[in-house]
Image 1 (cartoon, helix red, strand yellow):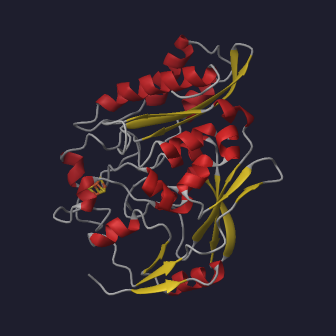
Image 2 (cartoon, rainbow, N blue to C red):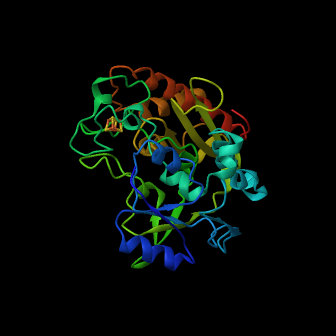
Image 3 (cartoon, rainbow, N blue to C red):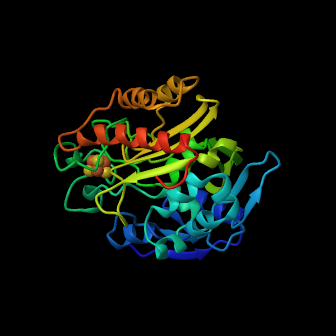
Length: 331
Ligand code: SF4
């Protein structure tokens, strides 16, 4: 294990300056994934920059009616916030479907976006892994891969993103507010995480020294009927085999607008935009939802052990759309 220094950042500017000056520095807040990785030497930073006491811990109403969630707000505080529960229940339910109460109390919103895949080969340093050490290989591609991707994988990496929260944020078209050495910028959620391509070691499009300051949720009135459905091997404390965030806006019996995102199927939250386009203007019934599910899974490329995810995802989409169209609630 490498020795590292621990520094408590005095301000966001201080944190950014320190991280920009040292390419091997890492930020730490809740530490619920990073400390696990440190323990098995996946990350060996030169310094840990503790940002946990910085002023990014508020949930604020934005002038446009949306919500701005500070990146250091705990997962529990986001899930339990009255405005989140009322206006974005799919986000609250997605968070509560993940981890345990103790972990959610420690974990932060920004850290949730930055957690890394739980591909077992990545965590087991007895195996090679392109994400851990580029150019060494991807044993999951030909090994045990029932938890792995059916969309967007490359010959370099077939891992999936583990977050539930991020699936809901993708469906809500959230925006990530970032502060870095070149100042502030906003990254649309769809552009925040990356597909593996030829650089599976990079999970996000953050540049060196950049810090997540907040995540902004635009107003989405029909998100009040949004739902989150997570399917997994056991009913708690397990990552998704497949998950679906859905929100349906009805005008009479027809679909006026819709949001759909999937988890457990790709290296980033997966937005089946063709299925969303298909749904607009169609009657909200079982046949429509079945067709949308078929469209959403077009182009899926299963590996040796995860072909079951295709049918599972279709059923999850149908179920989530049906419940949302009826007003939402627990799926
Ligand atoms: Fe590593 Fe990605 Fe392959 Fe898993 S899927 S072994 S994380 S390269």
